[in-house]
Image (cartoon, rainbow, N blue to C red; front, top):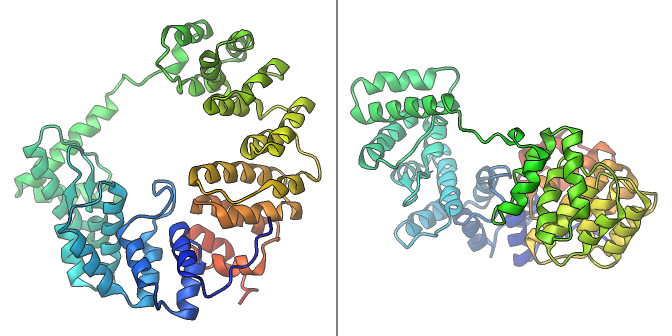
Length: 433
């Protein structure tokens, strides 16, 4: 499918989609056409986290705040966050984190009301040790913020023996500055002293721990026996075992895998080759890439993908033609010939399911990065346009800029992307201005 420059002004649905993905066209819309009729969508994006995976993607709040300021919605956003605090809260921690981060941006811009609201919003997620607002308060006010947060955490520690903390807040400061400030405060404040004592106890517990799971302690024979004796263990730890085991040990497991007729056993044994690939191609392994169990399919694909073999190329083409595009592309990376990008691009379509799309664009990126050039353009533009994840979009922009194949409209739009590293990739190229 052909990806072209999105027409401005965006429809309301297209603008909201850009807020979700972090495409730079959201800012282009506000700069060129204003925010008339879009204010509710901007506010919604601030109070509800829309990003696909906030743990892996760049923090979205600074980018959203840039939109808020351009649209002159600072007061409205703060009021919306304040109002939601008095209503039943969303069960999603990511929404709490989003609002806290936005309050930090508003406070940093000079809003005393936002600062007060941020401080009053410092809270624990019930029945967990997760805390909302702590990092944002420390990022906003440095040492003063750290002492304020430490005091509250110290109170929770005294009230709840199951509450747990680490030293990551202190680690935001160079050297021992954070700990030194807390030690001075602890001399006169028992709550801070409680916090500091718990940090030291936690760190000592980590440094003295000797119970870490050692996968290398298992022999191949024990791995095979574990599969049979522990049917409820998904055995994801086999991935690490396979990466560290020597070739002779992996060969023993491989021989058992070849003889296996039990899907659940095969699925777990394949995980021993997730990071290394199977030792060599055996056609009897192809039965598993068409198995109805999608998890087994992917375990087999991952283990076979590093191998170059004509039968794997044939399997890849068949999978792509049958609509199992992501798995087919994964097998094609090491079985690629000229013209394959056109074959892949001809099968691409827009998927409604974000997880399905994310899986597909990940395989497309691996293919494009392994075989760079102008032929990859359509596939990279597909990733750029439809990836739900801004990190994958960044990889697509990098692949385009590395090969000097980036369309001018992508360069222009990427200069306003939610991901700062994506913006940096195009900042040196001003040919689009």
